[in-house]
Image (cartoon, rainbow, N blue to C red; front, side, top):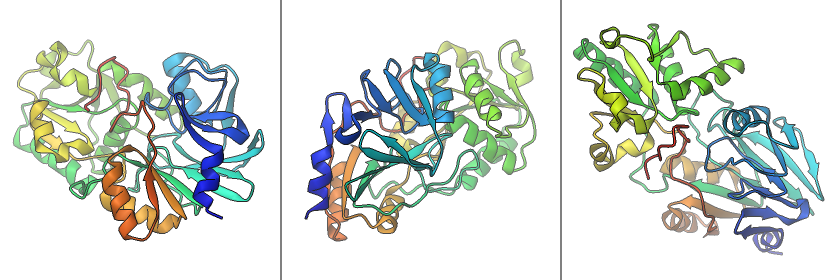
Amino acid sequence: MNPSAVVASWLKVTPAGLRAAPGNFWIDPVTPVDRAVITHGHGDHARGGHGSVLATDPTLAIMAERFGAQSGAQAARYGEPITVGDMRVTFVPAGHVLGSAQLVLEYNGLRAVVSGDYKRRRDPTCPPFEVTPCDVFITEATFALPVFCHPDDGGEIARLLHSMRVFPERTHLVGAYALGKAQRVIVLLREAGYSAPIYLHGALAGMCALYRHYGIDLGELRPVAGEPLKALAGQIVLCPPGALSDRWSRRMHEPVTAMASGWMRIRQRAKQRGVELPLVISDHADWNELLQTVREVKPGAVWITHGREEALAHALGVMGVPAQALSLVGYDDENDDDLTGTAPPS
């Protein structure tokens, strides 16, 4: 028996997304469906308009923040199996953002794990990735090229704080996506000893409040709105990436423009966005971590989606792990919807 072929008979790619036939549900569907199971709250995975939604409680809260309360919402707890149709579904932590989960799908003695987006680095704002052995592992491939080797997060924060010492009179304007990245940067700053107020663009306030609701301590945060510009000199201001280049940012006096993203490893991307201080801080696994994850999960086969599928498939083949691309549409590279209508970098 070829487990991959058997799983492929009940886990199929459709125009709406990946459908688990025995449970009659779609995983992170890109269009409204009768029954959706959602891995996490980023806008390229969580959309509104479904007949019913199964997700973790924080993900449902994130979706409610964005789309309003979801009809037929059912909250899943990490590690507790739920029967959906003829299939057993278990949510386990993915380490990506608050509420993010891998989906463990079990049917007729076989197990497939849909990773969603994930990272392997320590992140105090969400539970860490949980290794789950399986027959088929469906992995993202956002940074699946050897060039992507993310540096230590603390070192990147140290670079930001060093810049503040060198330019104490300038506002440090940091682009960070509203869900996950902004809160992680804040916590990393607090852990590095930065206790001053951190100023927020209005588009980040809602998600920061939601993180606080779930017990994540962010320290003192202040809105930029209403503050005289001279009060922002020498301060850290967080904003959505799209705000770095709009009229809002031009109000700042000689800001140091920074951005926190795995794509800041590519200098041309930083240059294109006018980023003076690129901070390589990602909420996705890098190349080595993707390979490490497959070694630890020990799947019979790997399906690869939304990213650099060919390079990862080749590397896994060399490792002796059968791998193939799973052609899903509608997912961005490193996207955490900034809630301003501004598209993230592609």
